[in-house]
Length: 340
Image (cartoon, rainbow, N blue to C red; front, side, top):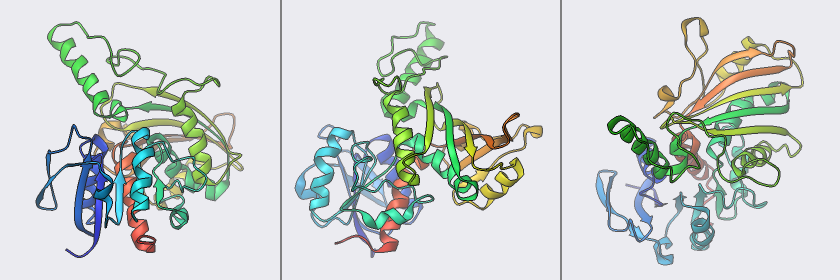
């Protein structure tokens, strides 16, 4: 194959695995593929592009000659290794929270701010999953009418907490069926089975969680609107895959449901599923494994015609992480802003 040298860091994690599959699915121009992970995962064999690839431990020399790095690791790991990869000459698309708010690191959702890609200095940040799907849905509304304020409540799947979050739900379901006794939670602050937990990440002095503040700050940066009002409440729900969001957006002028449907019908990466009479609206189970952001339940506020309400669903591991990262890499290639 002719193409680029690509490395996937965190290759055995939930997002890393999907990054590898998406490189195949989207026919990314991969000439050579290197899979990297922690010492614990080193030695595992992953099949990709018709060949077996042995996962190698992270080491500085592994980045020599690499053009593109797709990285999905904890922030502390990213802080150490993404600069090493960038210094070696690679463009790093980083899925952790470590670099998102750094002023000289572009934070990119290709449907919203692709123009930010060439401004990188070796690292491009991939936003938080809940932020990505929201800004993809909001972009057409902001372009058409201007957004003043966003109020959003999220219903986030357990896979947003990684393989351990997904496994915790599975363990609790199995225990409830077999014994009727659910084991104490380890990953989440409370039992997730048959429950909704209004806490994702730690609380801050503001009363908002870190996850909620990510939605505020990342949305402002991606949309280039530092004054934008964003009020989130983030909730973990016992769903394996896909995040759902109930969004109320205050606009500079009224936008009818019909106009909003027309705007979204033309928007890249958005699919409208909005036929309540036939019980058709976006569902987490149906969004899983797909790359679009799905919108439905579209309606104007009963007392405020300048407020539009809608329901937004997307697969958090694909568009909310892996797909967005690969799309950024595609943008890097299209613009030729690598190998510098």
